[in-house]
Image 1 (tube, rainbow, N blue to C red):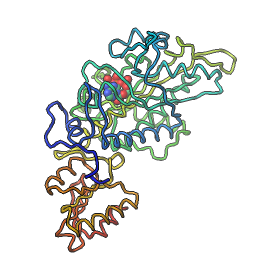
Image 2 (image 1 turned 30 degrees about the horizontal axis):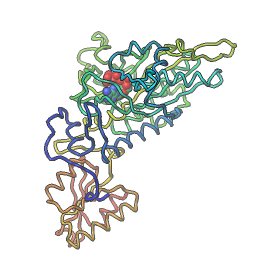
Image 3 (image 1 turned 90 degrees about the horizontal axis):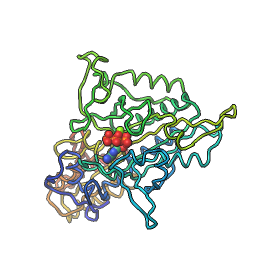
Image 4 (image 1 turned 60 degrees about the horizontal axis):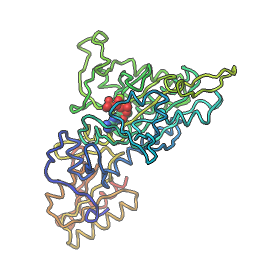
Amino acid sequence: MRLSRYFLPTLRDNPKEAEIVSHRYMLRAGMIQQNAAGIYSWLPMGFKVLKKIEQIVREEQDRSGAQEILMPTIQPADLWRESGRYDDYGKEMLRIQDRAERDMLFGPTNEEMVTDIFRSHVKSYKDLPKNLYHIQWKFRDEVRPRFGVMRGREFLMKDAYSFDLTEEDAKIAYQKMFLAYLRTYKRMGLKAIPMRAETGPIGGDMSHEFIILAETGESEVFADKKWENVDLEAAGLSYEDLNGLNEYFEEKTSIYAATDEQHDPGAIAEDQLMTARGIEVGHIFNFGTKYSKPMGATVQNKDGDVVPVEMGSYGIGVSRLVGGIIEASHDGDGIIWPEEVAPFDIGLINLKAGDQACDGACEKLYADLSAQGKDVLYDDRDARAGEKFANMDLIGLPWQVTIGPKGVANGMAEVKNRKTGEKHEISIESAMEKLAA
Ligand code: ATP
Ligand code: MG
């Protein structure tokens, strides 16, 4: 992509309304635009990152055996009357009426709707287990939308729902999601700690929140200092290996970590305890028959008895993760994107646009890197060097390669790693080799 043609409305100054770094950088880097409190448009670069995060989430859900569907954003209120949540949910639910004055709502979550889909089709234990998920916009009329996409009113969530015959099977479904979540966050360069959590309005008896530590986090959390060195990698572990899965789950959940509602000061020695702030990027629940019972989502078991299915639900804040990753990975100059979610792989800076040698070398490098499958943002604008460097640092692409009039005469380019700040003056051919790898 040529920067001269790209819609990237960057801001030089810090917007006053942005209280935390991710919100500041997302606005300054031209990733989002607010349209109303807690409601945002995603501009090209922000949208690209959002899609990359969504894709990682999707791949890891698929890998765990969950199946993607797409449910609507608008739901009939009657479904929520069946579960009893229509009255319980309160003001966070955006209630609307259609032209026939039927009560509708903009979905804040989808337990009722997915239970309705399930009960319409599945009647026998032989069709279990099932796990259905979708990645869809949600609306919650939050009292205090703030921090940009971190606490929006409209936000993108992945929500999965598991259906099993027995409590034991439901626990396996839970453990599979637990592993899928840790793999998902790891691929994004994040360390998310699973913490025992309250089940809240969703209900149920087993629940974990996945929390990334950051000073600007909204939750106060308590964790064993051991977490600093816990390796969440479970590279060879298969979703079919139920013993391995159980061992992994027991091992990770035995290391103390709790949100403030769940913290038990007696449970851990003071000198082993780390108190921190965190951002909730996912939340999983096992809630048994809370919805299947009132909504009549039942199956016939082996003995011919009709029983309600055991369910769980599993959320990931896809749009919140964009901000969460920035909170976890930035410096004073801007964003530092982990490679897997970076909007482009490489930023190519032409220090003297209009100069024949610079243009020629840049065009060639741009074409060659693109041919190698690299996604390059080429700053071909006629602008000052300082502005170009600052802009590239703000956007935070993993690699920068700069070609200027002095170097190009000797066939040289400068390659910079955004994360480490390391810069090397190398030949354009070696730059090509290094960056195409
Ligand atoms: P929170 O405690 O932050 O209000 P929640 O417990 O209400 O979140 P869940 O119902 O567990 O949220 O939703 C699943 C995930 O969706 C959360 O872990 C979070 O990452 C994300 N999420 C929830 N509310 C918002 C919001 N207002 N804006 C952006 N993401 C959100
Ligand atoms: Mg929660």
